[in-house]
Image (cartoon, rainbow, N blue to C red; front, side, top):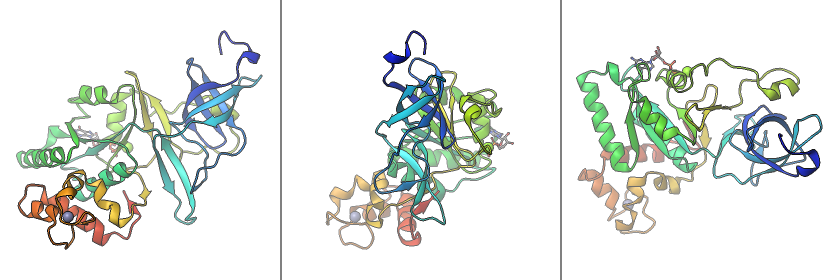
Length: 318
Ligand SMILES: Nc1nc2c(ncn2[C@@H]2O[C@H](COP(=O)(O)OP(=O)(O)O)[C@@H](O)[C@H]2O)c(=O)[nH]1
Ligand SMILES: [Mg+2]
Ligand SMILES: [Zn+2]
C-alpha cells in the first residue's frame, strides 16, 4: 500500500481474483495484490454456503501489520453462480460473482453440440441474469452442410435476441471480436468437453494453463484444492473466470411456471396470448403455439421449451 500509513487505512476496496476458502487474493484498487482473510460471519439469505465469498466479489478490507488483509465487507452482488452439493441439499458453493457475460462455445462437429444443451445453458444463464454470446468454434473444419446448419442456428438464436460469433480458436480467426467483447469485463466460458475452451483461453492469455502460485498460497495450510474458480487477467483488460471442469452453471431452481420467462422470444409473445398467465401448453388462444405452428418463431425453440417443461423434474442442470 504505497503512500499510505497504517492508521490512514480504514477500508481498502478490491476485487477477489482467487479464493480457496479461508484465504483469498484481492487485487486492491491501487493495483497491489493482498492475501486476505475473512473476519466474522457473512451469511446469505435463504441459502447456506460453504464459502462466504468467491472470485468476482468486491470487498473492503483492512491491512494488517504483516501486510495481509482482513475482509470486513462484501459488496452486494449483481449476480452469482452457485453450485449445490448433491448430498447436502441445503449446502451451496458460490462459484463466481458479478459475471458480466458467458461465452457458450458450440461446435457443429467434433463434437456436435445439441440445441437442447444450448437452450438449457441459455435458460440457466438467463436465470442468473448473465448475458450469453454463442460462439461457433472450429469453423475451419465445417463441411458445407455444417456451415448451413450453423447459419440456421445463427438465424434462430439471432431471432431470439442472442449474439453469435464465429471462431477458429486454433487458427485465431474471429479472436479479435471475442477479445473486443470481453475487454474490461468479467467473463466466463462454457461448453461441452472438446469444443475448444482451453484452446481459446490459451489464445486469449498465452500461458494461462501454467498455474503459478499466488500470494494467498503462502498463507494456506493443508492440501491445495483445484475445485475453486480463479480469475485470469486478460492482457487487453478484463477478467476470465477459470472454473476447473465446469461446462455450464450446475443446478438452478426455476419454478415450472416461470420457465417461459427465460425464453425471450416466447416471453415477448405472452401479451398476445388469450390468457395473461398462459404457459403455452394446451391453452386456447395461445400466440406462442400459433407462432411456432406458422413458423413465425422457431418451432425448435418451442419444442425445447416443451421438452424442458414436461421432461425435466428440475432443478435444471447444464
Ligand atoms: N480444427 C480446429 N480444432 C480445434 C479448434 N479449437 C480447438 N480445437 C481442437 O479441439 C480439441 C479440443 O480442444 P480443447 O481446447 O482441449 O477443448 P475443451 O475440452 O473445451 O477445453 C483439441 O485437439 C484442439 O486442438 C479450432 O478452432 N479448429
Ligand atoms: Mg479444457
Ligand atoms: Zn401462450
